[in-house]
Image 1 (cartoon, rainbow, N blue to C red):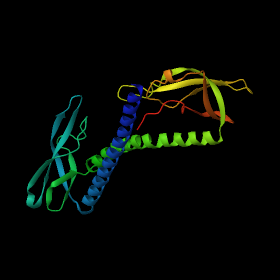
Image 2: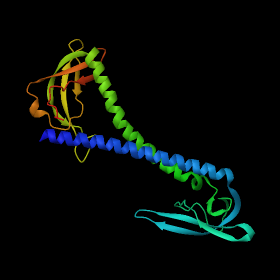
Image 3: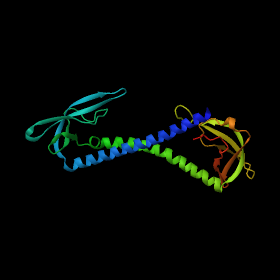
Image 4: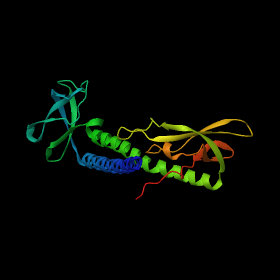
Length: 241
């Protein structure tokens, strides 16, 4: 039962880190293309004076946003009206306010208000969200790799001490699918300084209590800094592939 839970949680972790990374990369790519599109648009855009003719309120479940309707004169004095894709609360513009309008030559339907958020808002928002997703996903790859590298170094160059088993605790700082992993807690008293050091194992997605038969847990420490340590849990059963 415990091994099944462990396998399920590890698969969920691997799936989530892949999803976060791919979604982040996709959104960053979208932000880059939005940036490039706006840059290309600005290179050839024609400017015209316009006026805010109205404000449209858009309601969502928890907030409102006001989108300006802008009117400007196109070729031969033909009036063109468009709704800005950028809204805010409170409204950034007022009715009758004059604004600068940009549009691609021959394409009045491409008109935008010449302000930072109307031009760069999509790239900024998508890029920010994409960066957050990517950093979370990449962190789920990088952090375990760093920990594994640190553990390998301690196993090779660290000092092996036998700590006293204290119990098993839930690491409630981490929650996945409504569950928190377990950690083995043990302590060791430095015979030189008499200081007591508390060690916690890496996260375990099953309760290891029934597999701990003695009261001694091997721990590799940095002799000059016992705060750098690795609790050896290799005695625990492994999930068959």
